[in-house]
Image 1 (spheres, one colour):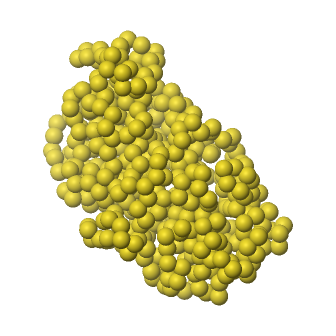
Image 2 (cartoon, one colour):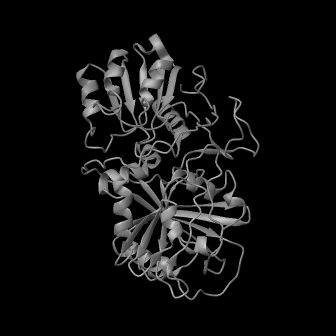
Image 3 (cartoon, one colour):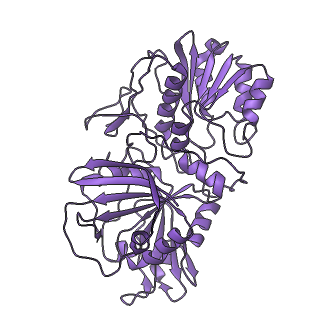
Length: 441
């Protein structure tokens, strides 16, 4: 079930990505309670990922590469784990993160988790959590290891659970398998878990080590952690700029193809906020082109603009779930109701309303994609800055020199003083440059 070769040598290997074809998680999940948890610090040096959400060590993979299991072409980037020879624990936790990313875009609202079972210096079992309702990473890895798990060390990127949910506790599976030691990348911030799993293992006489490659493990599940700590989904602002720093209503061509940063973003985020003008003006409403990708929940913003006072007909061709947020002055076209698309009319469209809705649906991450009519984003960006809701930004700089747009939703950002940006990274993507970073208000 792990889809990995348990006989891989523990030096300098790379793995292929599994082609996962799974339905989107249930959107009626009940948000958990939240507990305090110490904020994490980003590593000083991390290279980019496909989609930029979860930085790892990456090596370039040519387009057209096919996975060893006979699947179709994989993404253009792959992880390369390298052992430094001095810290095997760190090496195997990095391997866990590598495994966990096989399920990118499929586990929410659960975290991505990978597990490796090691005995006498050899990997005897591996696994990852594929989607909600399926067994956790530890169970798949223990099944892969079989009897060899006894007296072995289990490495897991996130603390094993110790409660009955849709699956039994992973702690009991580890105890039953008689593992000798458990090394966890980080404590689970979910208050249902929150060190209880580690305590259970210690009580059973199992040696426990925690906090290995902790920053890497936290970045892997930054959206899950943020929702646990704040009760709100993780919010990323995406926009395009000209080389002279002005806002553009454009996006690169190649970046929307499989392996491109925009295609990967759509796969990794649970929801994307879009302007209704992308539909009314026949602009390209894109979908992720990653093999077997889940498409994000579409949240369409429509205000009562002078050019139109009706919600445009939305063609439901890329994803199975959409909702339109509009103001009370705007009327929905009959075709919208006939399509079964939910419409929420508010006195004023706000990020609070959008994020509360996403949270109630069990969505952990939201991409605010500034394309189309900039007027529809101005108030949202201002609110996001004032209330510090915007956690991250992804900026595409295109090879264009242009004049200033009449409306600039980024003005609140440009007027801010002494706002620190951390973990700033850049990547060439065809003819454009993509920059990402995190706001530290």
